[in-house]
Amino acid sequence: MRNNDEALIVIDVQNDFCPGGALAVAGGDEIIPRINALMQEFSVVVLTQDWHPPTHSSFAAMHAGKAPFDSVNMPYGPQTLWPSHCIWGTQGAAFHPDLHTDPADLVIRKGFREAIDSYSAFFENDRKTATGLHGYLQERGVRKVTLVGLATDFCVGFSAQDAAGLGYATTVLEGACRAIDLGGSLAAAKASTQAAGVIWLD
Ligand code: VGL
Ligand code: ZN
Image (cartoon, rainbow, N blue to C red; front, side, top):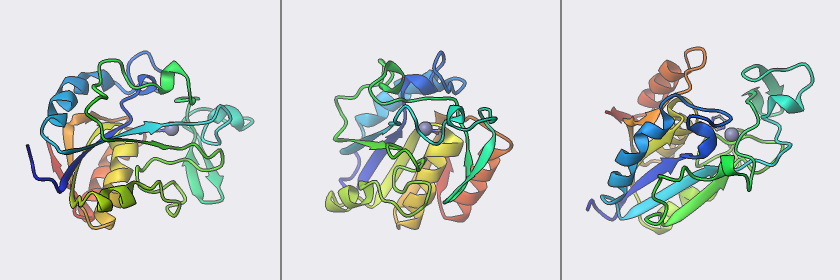
């Protein structure tokens, strides 16, 4: 068991991001056995769950003439459009059945506001609206976070960026993540998080 000031944050290991899901990430389910084993090493374990209303503004279907993976300008900046995914209460939004959820201390949902997407576990895509995770981790005395899950270049990468910005010693275990890799997004996520001090390990 590691120190009490270290948390494992498991990002979005949900059916829709695994093979067969609405926004499937290649090999998304392959990381689950390692994540389950890692949970036993940490005294603080947090799961995140992408959790969208059926009419979420990040869905291409809500934008006439747009297709998944196009981009639009939202009041908070550019936003990639996605196939409809992780609609709250559906099987697609449920955790993958192989993921151990019992060891989790906290499940944090994000992306539930229709007008704002939320990649990061800490702040929504306006980069201002807090999810509450920072307050929780502070109250638990957490100073170091290890991030795993889906997808490396979106929700994991944005969470890592924010964690480092909030002052946590931040590690991404890349082998326990899988990426979407849209137009160089994986390389961009790595470069920007490394510049912020995030350590990437396999
Ligand atoms: C994610 C795109 C849209 C992710 C969530 O979990 O990385 N990506 N919603
Ligand atoms: Zn989403």
